[in-house]
Length: 197
Image (cartoon, rainbow, N blue to C red):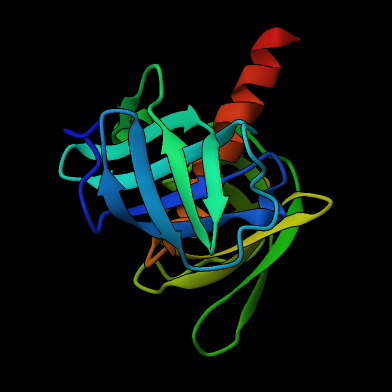
């Protein structure tokens, strides 16, 4: 792991309860794992509880699961994972997401939209209004009853249907690391659930 995680590298931790998502900076790397100084209190990250970990690297987004073996003074020591992988943008899992929400532009014009599918990189949706492809739009995405992310979306494609509706695909821009990692984890978990049904 010491070739993948380096000192001062930022790592996002997503425990089973998304509400306790946290991030920190690596302060020590050893043969057994690595230590991090956390940005927020470590509530929700219990000893030996499996969590998902994400970090941006020159090779893509590093992803692995592991657990904390020490938690003290807002520092945690993470055991080396058994395996890891790098997620490239083209590898982001896309899942069906059927929900109604609202997006707004920078002038506070609002659009009622119906989402169709979602990945960590973007969203496909329908709306009754034509959309300016040169603008960016703020979208509220309700993933489940207690989890919401807020994203800026840049539309890249728009098709008008015979029904008069518009189908659009867009990519997320200026995302926070926490929102991006939350979307990656949500889509991966949702995809696994669908395969197991």
